[in-house]
Image 1 (cartoon, protein in one colour):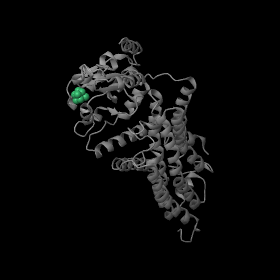
Image 2: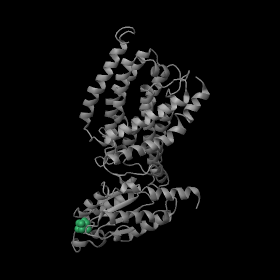
Image 3: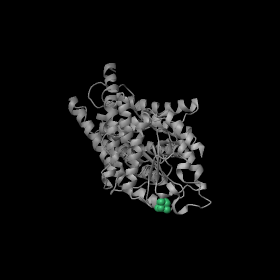
Image 4: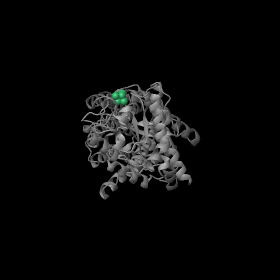
Amino acid sequence: MSVIDKLVARSRRRSPWLFRLNAGGCNGCDIEFSACLSPRYDVEQTGALLVGSARHADILCVTGPVTRGSLAALETIFAQMGDPKAVVAVGNCPATCDVFAGSPVIAGPLDGLVPVDVFVPGCPPRPGDIIEGIARAVAALPAKGARGGKRDAKRKRGAGKKT
Amino acid sequence: MNAGRALVGLLVFPGLLYALPAAWLMLWIERKARARMQGRIGPPFYQPFFDFVKLMAKRTVPLAPFDAILAAGLPILAGSSLLVALGLLPVLSGPGGFAGDVILLVALLEVPGLAAVLAGFASRSIFGQLGGAREAVLSVVSSVPFLGAVVALAISARSLRLVEVASGPAAAVRWPAVIALVLCLPLKLRINPFSLVNAEQEIYAGPLTEYAGPKLALWELVHGMEWVAWTGLAACFGLPLRSGRPARDIALMIAGSFLLVVLLAVAAAGTARLKVRQAGLFYWSWGLGLTLLALVLAVIPRGGGGG
Ligand code: SF4
């Protein structure tokens, strides 16, 4: 690994920019996610930053079971994010659809729609667990190739199309 | 003008060698001060540097060739003009600059705002266009008091040379003009209470909503350099620099710039975002009032009431 590759890998670990998408959840997980940014948990200490545009983000944090109405938004946002990127499923909803399972308006669970890197269980999960999930997703980023992981990105897009 | 001295100004101090680390440090101070004001710990000091490296190495969705040239060209244009503006800053004494360089400095400092307007409209995103339109309106709003303050200083110094404009004015003119200039900084730097242009979560990231990867990294760097240039300008006009002792002048200018960054960041953290109308009212009352006071005092002949 060259010095530049090491610097890039280190920068990625120290600077995860987050984008949050509520794909039809009850808002419980979103409240816990917001608590991560509060003085008590202060996720910005780790270099994380909540950004307003998906194009700026490295980590997509999805809450909710992915309703049919939010599916197009999920796909657009995932496509807008540049590689390397990771997806964190926050709460039981994106993992199993939780209390919404079996509803005709649900397109989830999430891992059938986009590749998910980390699941954070809980209904809702505690802020500490969400931060740990983000940290695990960040740790997965440098392994995807120091300059963007082209092959991995192709594999991921393929996985997204299959379902 | 001495070419060697101009080159040192451009590449060493207050140019590239100083501006690059200072830009990252000022971006960090702004985030850190905001975090401390909110009772948080905030990011470590190397954060803006790692953000820059990460963005530079990020793969982005390809754009059409013309859009790609425009997207990369605008931040490069903004950054280059800021660098030349920094090179012109009258920190040290001596025959630096040339007649009329104050006009060049003002023009160069307006380029990043213009580039942000173009970037917003070129991105063809509704949020980018909203941000671009807000930037256009607000740069007119803040430019009137800013230009008036510079004109007052120039009239009082009876010169259009930066060194003389910075050293020459009477104290009665200098203080209202410098305060009007400092009042313009939150709007020029797009921070609270005048963060309308890139109002985060409201219009996403304003003109930069559609930018990503290396192009966004360049814009972040340009934003940091805006901090260095605007606070450096206020320090040059407001502090007793150009004493003939370079080490003292440079240290004083750096200390003044960083103190101003802390004050602006604390003021930003303690205030909420105002509306365009409220921002306009503020600048056209307080900003313009101070500027008019400076202008009136400047046109009173020397030896009269102007001192
Ligand atoms: S996991 Fe529970 S708290 Fe979170 S969105 Fe679903 S139902 Fe709400």
